[in-house]
Length: 390
Image 1: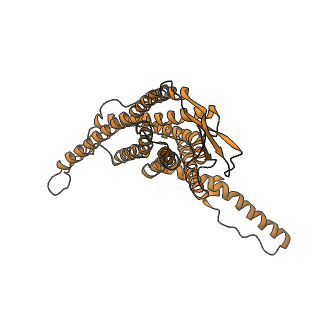
Image 2: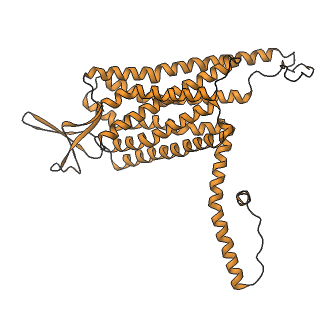
Image 3: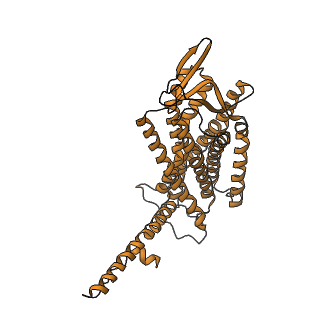
């Protein structure tokens, strides 16, 4: 996507092709973005249905997971489609409102996700490192979620205010190299009164919604890991030689048992799941943050910026948005409740698809019986899905 410059006297005009990529590259980008879009919408939609539809699933941790799913759904609805079209077509093809909304929603969803990850880490930190402190209640979790979204809105307000669509002077788009029919090149960007403020704002965002929160998450999960390790070592050292636990008399109801592990394997599995979610978030968004800092502070020339915009940024955006698609897979792999919820939804819709087929088959058999009258209709064993539905 290199522009063709034509010089006329002292005026320099740059022409860009309307489509940034060749057909194979555009097809690959479309398939890749469509894949994560479908995975994001279906997976996070199922997470919302499972948590909201089952009262037993409405725990503090699951409320935070629900908030993550809502953030990811916003990314899927507002960010993935517009970013794909923006990467395929030169310039900004949408309105000024879409420019502001896309930047605002993307920033708020990312901010909400990272702040929610911090809240989850704090909750797990309190439960594991300080197990005798009172746990967070559902009311506190709901208030925390509201505060997360308010804080995300406050942080991203400057971006929404400064984002605007303007025509790039002396830059035009042409279709099929027809220079007689050129289109103005529009760009969606942050129009700061002082250009240096863009660098300052990017640095503030990087610190507040990436570097500092994920550093806190790393420290808390590291402390959780140390606590779990020291607890397992202490529990193992209390066993006699030979590794067999001592025989203890039956304890009274409500009395603590010495050989009972302080943390269950289920709780440790949840810690691994949440830690993996935080780790993948960190790795998925790191390339995009690196590119944004590079474009602001790197002092790159126009050919280098064109190369980054055409090929590197689409992959970095895809990698960042793919994080919104993998979280439901992690929940289904590590958490039995989510796994059973996914399976129940799949069985429900599978049954809905199978029942019309069974009814159609039975109607054909009855029709054949009434016409031919050869022998009675043989009874078939009903399927599990039909028996459950009926």
